[in-house]
Amino acid sequence: MSRFLADLPISPPDPLLGIMATFKADPRENKFDLGVGVYRDESGNTPVLAAVKAAERHITDHQASKVYEGPRGNAGFCEAIETLVFGGQAQARAENRVASFVSPGGCGAIFLAMTLAARTSPKGRIWLSDPSWPNHLKIAGAAGRDALGYPYMDPATGTVDFPRMMDALRHAAPGDIVIFQGPCHNPTGIDPTVEQWTYLGDFCARQGLFPLLDVAYHGFAQGLDKDMDGVRAFLDACPETMVAYSCSKNFGLYRERTGCFLVQTTSPRDAEAVASHLADIARAVYSMPPAHGAAIVETILGSEELTALWQSELAGMRERMIVLRGQLADALNVATGTDAFTPLVHQNGMFSMLPLQGPVTDMLRIQSAVYMPASGRINLAGLTSETIEPLAAQLAPYLQAALR
Ligand SMILES: Cc1ncc(COP(=O)(O)O)c(C=O)c1O
View 1 (cartoon, rainbow, N blue to C red):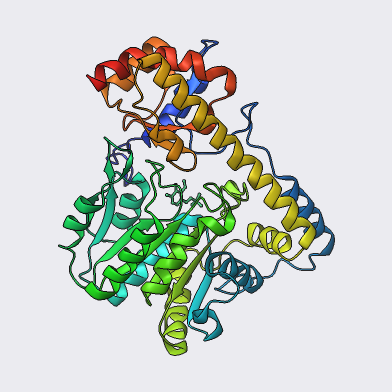
View 2: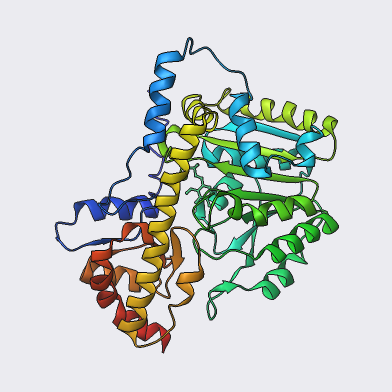
């Protein structure tokens, strides 16, 4: 008998999933989960949004068929996401220059982007912020692309290190793909200013770069419209831009795999060409996109009442994270006797970086039941008003050593 699998090595587990599993198994009562990449409420749950529940009831009552929707998926959903991203009045939409497809989550959209770009510029390399979300590198590899990093954060100020970032990006060659994250950069929580977004869009257009804006936390920073100011400024400055949009976090649809891939082009012909390639790429991987999550989002955004309910639930998530940021910054400043953590307040979304890396994070896990990835990224949504001070006390000696 042939044995195809006997020599197959066991692939190392995703480090973050490993951390989640050890956290669950840890019997200590006072443990801190800063690793998981999902939103949690004050009781540590990730509930289904009431707007989603209501939309699901509507779908169950009215859906007449489960037949395939076609390679683009739900057109009503795609148009609703176009409106969220571009706003109602965008010229590119009025002129039929936008292609949009349902994708299996934001990851599916990023995969479509990298594969499409491989067809338009086969030698193009991918530029990622350093640090970035580790899955960008994985998806680049899966799409057969080489990846390079550009510096992103200035640890001293907790803001974008724009001069160093631009020094690196000046080495990008025409045809290269540059990934920028929309609001709430993962893992730093640091976003460019609107002026920087405009500069970046203009820079990409002039250099002949093909940008991908990865929008996974829309509504988590300052509000639905405000959060798109930078993305829209970029789209105004750079006529050919790809956008990967995830509904996992802002609609709480994680497991439904709901995303949208959008491409702004310069002509209706180009949009049609893009759509034909997206259908072809998807056909070979998942053929047709999942429908349920897209139907939920379409139902919510198609109803004034459900949209208002969703927006208030989204505001609740956002406000909780803003409060936690303030509380954590205060607690860490007091515990370390510094003001080094004030920048946390100006960062956005669920994530920020602490100056704790590698072996220190192992020690924290073993000695203090603090679970966080070796990169030093923390998810603030894993905290509650009660856990912040005890956490700050556990972190203080390590942070003081790092600041010395
Ligand atoms: C930066 C970033 N992009 C994209 C995604 C896409 O997630 P999903 O495929 O679950 O929609 C995530 C999720 O964690 C993310 O952090």
